[in-house]
Image 1 (cartoon, rainbow, N blue to C red):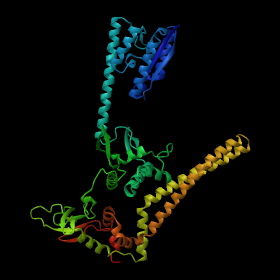
Image 2 (cartoon, one colour; image 1 turned 120 degrees about the horizontal axis):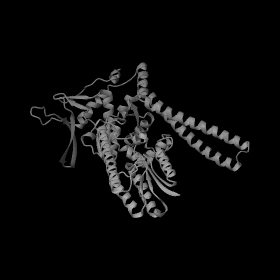
Image 3 (tube, rainbow, N blue to C red; image 1 turned 135 degrees about the vertical axis):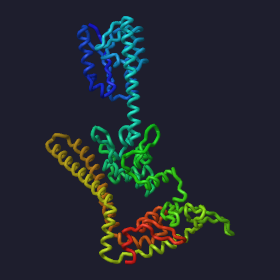
Image 4 (cartoon, rainbow, N blue to C red; image 1 turned 135 degrees about the horizontal axis):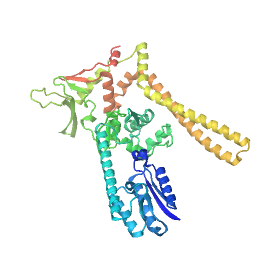
Length: 485
């Protein structure tokens, strides 16, 4: 009885839909062997999901097997000639093995004899198959390039997003839970300066899971996440960043703060409290920028910070510069005008604070509910375990082992739940202290860094206008309701 080797390969989902699936190919091999009084004793398969390296590995293993066992087999079976190899180099190797080891190359659906004419037909079909493979690769790359040009990711989207199909086209939307995890990681880095390992531990303590199957973030994944420009609206393709259509998860201020934490950016005027477009020149509408001047004095070299219009040097522009101390005095005078003595306005401010922290409150509640469900599930498992012991389904030693394991998990989850509940109370306390915010700002002003000062001034005043040497309020904000009350 003859013996055959089968080699089944599917390179794409399109070919599988057209009827070249691995199972169909194998059935054809067995049918051919049966018609020729033989059996398929060895089968090699290359799935359509295989990577190029995996496919090469299987092909090499098959060729090595044929060389070692050539005397034991009567043929190497393929479904079609273009299924035998993905390029002409591999096809020529098959011909070499056929001639050198006397193992015939057999296409079960395109049978040709081993004459010169038959070989020419096979080579022609192999050439057409190689062309189709190469053209498909070009078409796929072209399609990916056009997708990137349109603003979409070339393949699967990063963590924090999810792919959905609308009208047959894949687009990207924000993954509600995972995007919150991304924001939390960026927040801890930007505002608390935690290291990668510290963020991993903090997220674990807070019950923030990477996925349900892999709860803990790894340092490498977290590091990659904090450097991924996809979260501010870009798409990476061929080691370059392109503008994307996906919604941003991280705001530019937080992104820049994280970049500074990794020493990827060094701010100059942006590190000055009253620069970064906080003040606009009334004369020309351009932003006021900061500059540092050094002056040699009797006591040594001193450094002074000045603020001036970006078009300070332009012909006809007022040459006005303010020292930082002069700006500081005017800003402090504005802050003294804020107070909140009325009860109704105090309640309004508490509600505003709660609204501003609604995301944190919602996130905290969601995490607490998840932890409660997990604790409840473990309690049910403990009850079931006890029933198994009482019914003598499991041994006492097995019971003790599993009971200890479940109890440890329960204790860990309860500790995380306590942490979440404490954080929820902390957020509520912060909201309750909102009416005191103006007094706290005035008393603690000197302790704030440049970014905190900018955020506070934008929130209270919206921005400023430099009119000659006077700083005037520009945009109106809701917080001006509290002025002079």
